[in-house]
Amino acid sequence: MAGHSKEANIKHQSAAQDGKRGKAFTTLVGEMATAARQHSDIDTNLRLRAAVGSRLGVFGPVKDALDEQGFDACPAQVTMVPDTKAELALDQAKDLMDMIDLVEDLDGVQKRYANACISKNLVEQRL
Image (cartoon, rainbow, N blue to C red; front, side, top):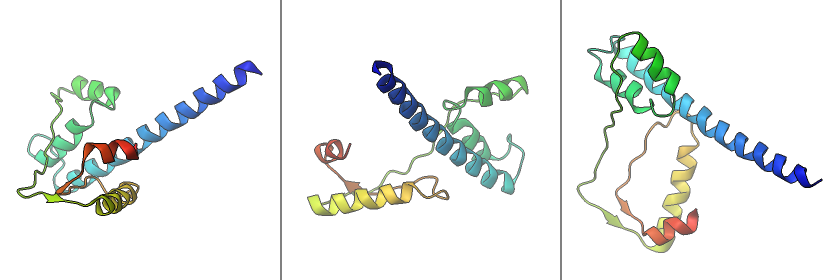
């Protein structure tokens, strides 16, 4: 039975990795569908171009197929940076991190932003 534990560990690791890929794919499809509804031409639709470019690292064959079609795919990302930041107490930071975890599990959520300052020690404790 020595090999059973190793096989189980591999199975669980593969399942976790497949789950991450599935979530990334769902997010990618949602971003692309929303952007394509506005205008389907990738040359003039910056949101569509960003949606395609932001996930190319996760999906190599997506990039290969675009290259074959003559599209120059490069990663791009737009971020929101707060002008003011809020210092949170320990219990407030824990509550905020719990809420962010719940929001991340929703299918419709593509990005989330906050202006909270949370110490690295607290974040490491959560991991």
